[in-house]
Image 1: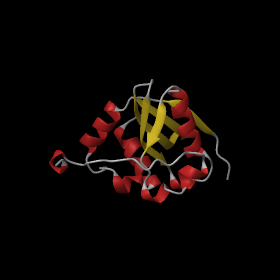
Image 2: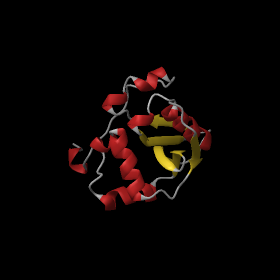
Image 3: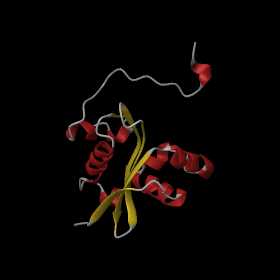
Image 4: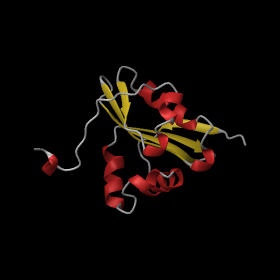
Length: 138
């Protein structure tokens, strides 16, 4: 199947569209899709949204936070399962990097995507740390 995908920076994405593509990509399993207020905040506070649309229908999205100079954190990369394995994810990453060319692009992989990123040329970095709550600090 061949698709005609249009990519663009689109910083006014609707909550419903974003939730829909998260769910169609399986990323919704690890995002607060039932909490529309939190999803709205995620969209409002992102500094860079790149979309992939097929005849106007959102089929992929890259949601990033960046200073455009040093660091771009790619928080969400979602591609509708029906559109996967077509190069859409890779192109969303490429478009995100092109929008902030001086900044290093960094992401945490979803468990199902761990094998994907090395295949498209991304390097693994073993020194990542995180906490979910301030109470976790010792």
